[in-house]
Image 1 (cartoon, one colour):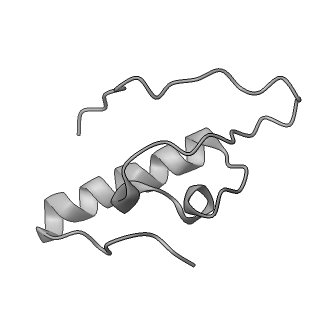
Image 2 (spheres, helix red, strand yellow):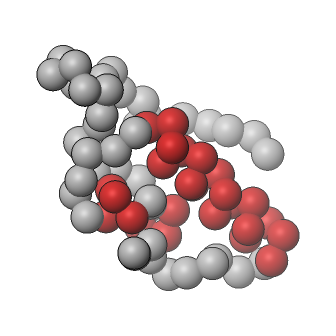
Image 3 (cartoon, rainbow, N blue to C red):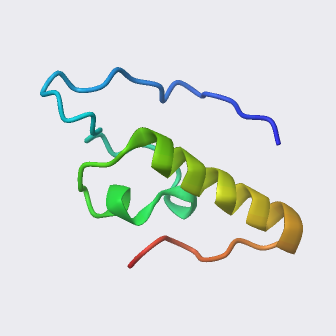
Length: 69
């Protein structure tokens, strides 16, 4: 799997909690916390999106149309 950044990289907010707040990405690859406009950990949501990509590569279809709890 090759990883690419399409302009979504960002610096952490200066409030010091290490969380991100911007809603970015494609709906079918977004972690549930992004869809719910909650603060999120960038590394964890990137891993979630990578897992969706791997699922599609292996199964041929997306695991769901849009993430939800």
